[in-house]
Length: 353
View 1 (tube, rainbow, N blue to C red):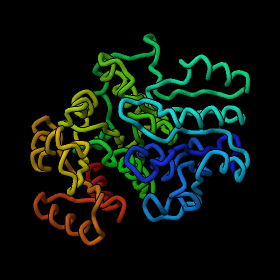
View 2 (view 1 turned 180 degrees about the vertical axis):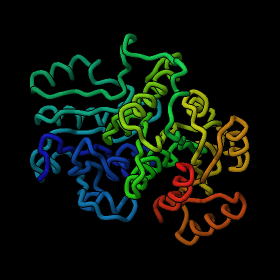
View 3 (view 1 turned 90 degrees about the vertical axis):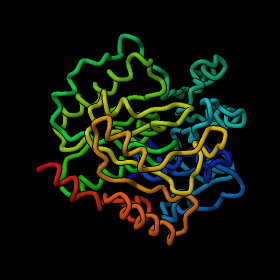
């Protein structure tokens, strides 16, 4: 039976099939924190199944043109989750209008953007009058709740594996989550450390929101999450969700996972048809996979597999790239969407021995 207290609809307002809606994409693929019962998008996608729009898999999650249609056709909506990750984390004005409508309808709001609803007095007052919650997932922790790096990471006996990418929106979180699930299905104990708001929204127990954390405490928060996970679960594997990429000029990230997080193994994601960082020629060309592997291994970690983001690829092209890169790199090449990630299980089993 559905838990009506966790029923949620996701707001994308016309962005559902764009990379800006990667938060929604993660929730459509799966979450233990909410039961997703609908998506609010636009006329072009209304009436379709969100899973089929995302990756061709029917998930019984209907798409609605607007909030009014959703609330008329669905029962027991408890949360509206803002399902986009905008540049700079700003809340689009047209979404704020929907948020106001939802609050007036008695629906609580979950916001993963950098623009906090709890800092808008008129929204706070309305929410209080309607008896609903405003949850700002990215709101930074209080100073006294932050952790500084201690070196305790070196006591961890679990295999720590970083899942990092060549650019933003590569599928790092999805692949890490799939790897955890594949391990569990094969009798291996595994956990995932989330580092973004969507990981928390999907039900992650261990982690922190990287880009809301003061720089001095990023390494410590990462270490604390890993060490806590290890002590409480004694997992065979701990997968670290990467953010951005080592060389994306808008926000280089990843060395923390390898150095502060002591991840000695890496699964590297890339998109063979994406030429520029964030698809913007002005930001520069994405380097070769081989050069990224070289950097990672000079930092003391080993790339045990690469995974292909097959955006703009036909099925035939996806398998062509898989074969090409397996020949060139001599390591497993995963196609997470087409094949899943079970191909890596023998490698992981070998690490455990």
